[in-house]
Image (spheres, rainbow, N blue to C red):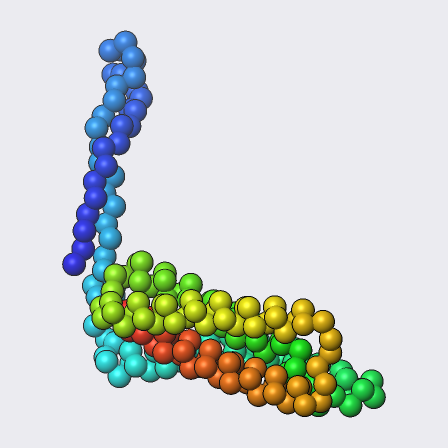
Amino acid sequence: MSEELSLPHKTSSGGAAAESAGGAAQDDAKIVISRVSVAEAPGAQDIGPWQRKSLRRSRLAIWLIFGVAFGLVPLAFDYVWGSAHDVHPTVNGILAHGELLLLATVVCAETLGKHLLVMMRHGTRRPTLKIIVFGLLFLLTALYAMSYAHLRYQGEEPVVGQETHIAHVSLAFFGVAVVTALVARFLAEGEE
């Protein structure tokens, strides 16, 4: 379905006739702006349902690699850097400082923004489900941000027993963040 919008546009035509009439003559013209829907775009009929699913999976895989896995790279460098400088870090020791909570906050907040943009741009199919996912993402973002701030300002370094507990809670929160973000992104990809 294509839509056309025409706007009046005044053009000035020069020449001897306009000057002999005593001024610049104005001709009415129209600028036509055409918007073609994605379904009418060239080659759009060539995309079958299996290709759309493949495209959806590709987008989710790219997000998992560049948005999530690359977000974990600083933690890996922390471990390598500590090992190179004879600190002998443990995984629990690295995760006990809350960086994984910070990453979970970023994953949820970024997905929250994308989910909101898709809802605003395309309207909503299944509005109840999308509102529930939006609310869950909002609550998780706030919970993870508050948990990170609480952990960073509790006043002392965690002891060995606390390191393990904090690391396990951080991993659980991060897992919930990634799964929730995947569900929200899957819903958003279905709208686009």
